Image (tube, rainbow, N blue to C red; front, top):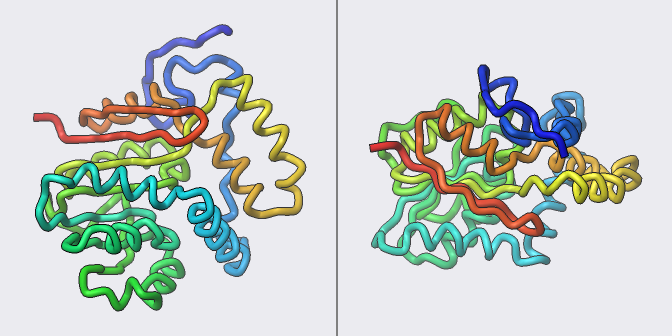
Length: 252
């Protein structure tokens, strides 16, 4: 497999596979937005996709596994304050509140419909939860307001310049940021995955967004480049058949 030059002159132009991405990996990405990111897609379709994400996350234990990762990071803090960015359906924050009796969680999303739905749910009635709209690229909070910021399964929606900004903002308002997202699988496996998803994507909105998510996921080298651009330290662990986890902190 031929690899390309590994110098990033402009983070906005960095491939999703990172500065050292192969020519094939560079072909396996897209600027096409998911239905969830499009203004011309009916809100009912978007709600159906979010509901499917919630159901599948519950069915396969994904919400609980993500909650375990988050709680591990705040295990030594008595009353942790956690900011969830891009919460969508709020299932992760719901698990955190259920599993940690003294945690305080700010549940946020940039989409006003998602925020309204979460506020109208049990999250809106929980005294340890605050539900509000937040733009993760420009967080309306003071430095060090939270013990931990978490961004789960939505980071791939961000373009590289936005992603670097989110890392910078998350580590500004919190002592640590945890990003949990889809892994970028090796190119041969990626081709096979896309071939399996493509027929379903023609009629099932969830599969459509899943296919695009795969094309927009970041590799470990890309995540390290984003961290370097944001001026923060990142530690990346990845499982090509499960999840990718980034732990980020401000330098010094």
